[in-house]
Amino acid sequence: MAVFEHKQLWESIADQLRDEILDGRLAAGSRLLETELADRFGVSRGPVRDALNDLARQGLAEDLPRRGTFVSSLSERDLEEVYVLRRAIEEAAVRLAIAKASDDDIANMYECLVEAEEAYGRADLPGAWEADMAFHRTYCRMSGNGRLLALFEGLASQTVLLMRTALATHASLAWTPPVDLHRRIADAVAARDVERAISAVGEHYQYTQDRLNASGGRASGETAAGTAAATAAGTAAAAAGQRPASGSR
Amino acid sequence: MAVFEHKQLWESIADQLRDEILDGRLAAGSRLLETELADRFGVSRGPVRDALNDLARQGLAEDLPRRGTFVSSLSERDLEEVYVLRRAIEEAAVRLAIAKASDDDIANMYECLVEAEEAYGRADLPGAWEADMAFHRTYCRMSGNGRLLALFEGLASQTVLLMRTALATHASLAWTPPVDLHRRIADAVAARDVERAISAVGEHYQYTQDRLNASGGRASGETAAGTAAATAAGTAAAAAGQRPASGSR
DNA sequence: CGGAGGCTAACTGTTGACAATCGTCATGTC
DNA sequence: GACATGACGATTGTCAACAGTTAGCCTCCG
Image (cartoon, rainbow over the protein chains, first blue to last red):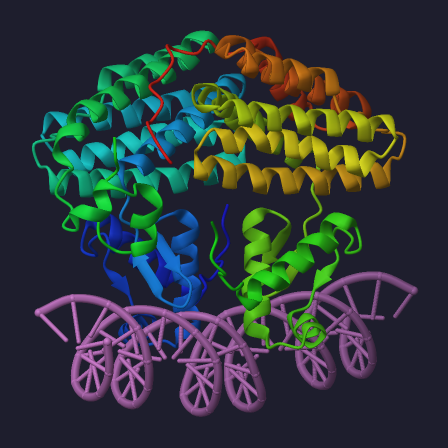
């Protein structure tokens, strides 16, 4: 469908930075200097500004006025926020997707599913995550709701970022994508059973949150400035800036 | 609480433009010239660009690369997209709000409710809409989910814009806010009955979409199919209640 | 008279520079 | 010795200007 559509400069920059953030090359909390990036990409600060703006809009960067932008360091609280929204919109998505899905769409959905299962079988965690997201994206796209899809993209990016940082800090959390729950979603959509699809999505997120509550509670204590973490939970940490903030629970 | 936090230039500009768009002073589809606005506000094009960016992010303006930005002219399809998302996130919102709401919160919610009813009684439609939105915003804020609230704000703005244009084009649509349905939501939240609250939200949007389909909805069997499916789906069965994050303040 | 092609004008994308602001460090005082 | 005060450096917010592209119009040809 697409004609050439030259990408704007800031778009290319944003894509590049997005990749680096999600790959982990740009660690959470690291500073994103406008001048430095402008120098690095060989452009002026304008496009860099726009790119950072886009990243902030998507939740991958945090912009503190007059102080700079930093790679988002998402906390468990952020994770919970993201998951609540993902569950909400994905339940709506399957509801619509079932009404609109063509056979091709459903076949495509299953393709993503087996790809994820294979990647997981190969112990290729990054690949499994990617395929996992592709699966979720499939029915979000099927919904035919552009706003919903855009919203999903942002939340998915934040999820990936968060998973990466979580895995980096307490490596014991060997996250296993819930492939069987995915299959239940897919089957329900294929059977065009709205109720079952919605509850399958709900179960998926229930499982996910349980997993994270189980593993996240114990390991997050080590955030340098003990005083801040102990007393003022969210707001102080956010204002203080770039250290990976620990959620309080 | 808030320290002074001086507003950035672009923020003031965005607020001003937002007001004008929602007031109807800037008609849907009208062009937003960077140079002209810069001249008008007595600033350079930079802050204006940022402001327009923000408006576009919120869905109030549309940015066509290399061609300019225009005030969004939302169609019925857009309306449907917005309402699907609003329903999804508001169902999630009441679920959380019930777990976290203090008595003050609930009192505040009822205040918004009676305000809306009074405004509607006075045949003050704009006032009723505003209070309507304030009511919805109440429990979105109660959810304690910042992302959810931000999302709601954007969708609410788009709703207002759309209502305005719809009312302008076919004036026969004398839109009546569903005050009784609002009260059902409020009562369910106050009673801390999750199931009832969620289904009340669902009914609210069901009613709203029916109203709009009745008055506006010709063209596109596609959207009609979508609404029909959503209708048939009924209210989602929520999985077991999730643990409220212990939390802020 | 209708359509294709080129020209002009205007606007956006991008650039480099200036100035205000914030954080950091050093100094002075209690 | 610890805290408050001041200056410095660095970085963002803002500005004015340049260049490329787009839309509209006019002309020319069939």
